[in-house]
Length: 115
Image (cartoon, rainbow, N blue to C red; front, side):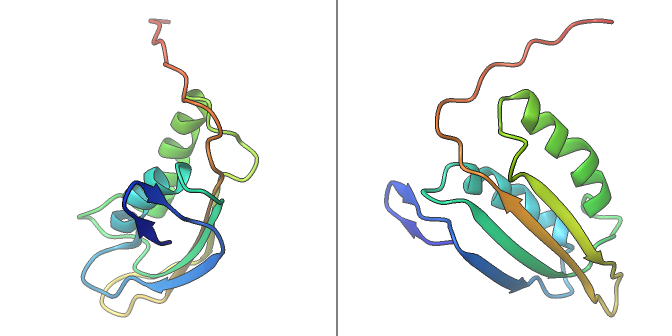
């Protein structure tokens, strides 16, 4: 992912080692927001810690954030978080692949109802 003033390039396939000081969930949050508004769809493999008490686990992210984005009109096709392997501190070893489509138009507002 590259950034030019005013433009998020996105696109391609990238691998990134998140290290062992922060879990993968820490990196997923900004990546998905930036990836949605890139010029090209994003696919990135992140390596490191998948489950850590400080940050959202990859399972929590997949089961909460992705469905929420779909309610805002983000296309289901191309939006995926695939857990390849799990890893915990201090050794890490987890791998996930995040795929983010681009949003061609504006996002729609979400209305909440009490049910």
